[in-house]
Image 1: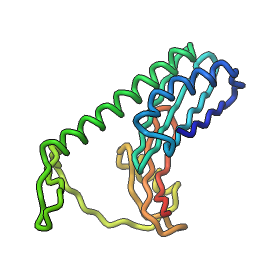
Image 2 (image 1 turned 180 degrees about the vertical axis):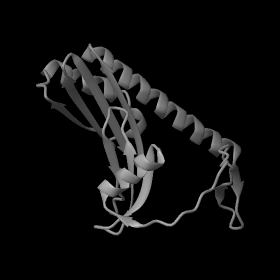
Image 3 (image 1 turned 90 degrees about the horizontal axis):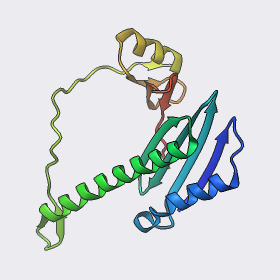
Length: 175
């Protein structure tokens, strides 16, 4: 796993970086060498936030924890990531175990209906807006997120409220 460790408003000690690498190395057996992990530590006053993201084969696992003790925050982040990975792995194994069928060519296919129930489907016109207008619209309707067509890029984007305050912008990354 390729690990990037960075600090915002803080200089990280080598011992902490080694601890991060050791903790994340337990996920190597699941992901292998082609996974990317990013750990960012931010210090604001006496609070320390550890944010970790692991990307592998299009899947993103992310956790964030704020605490007075950076080691406790790191341990919590690793624990949350472990639960997310286990949950995803168990769900995938269950789908493969229960939904395996053969298609007309005799090849195995997965035919499983998820237990996700959509309770509402909403369609609406998407107007070209700039990011600031989209945030204003989101705040006016009182939602946590807002989908819009970015007038600068002509792509569908989403703005959202971040738990830590401020706003986020989701943009497609076409490779």
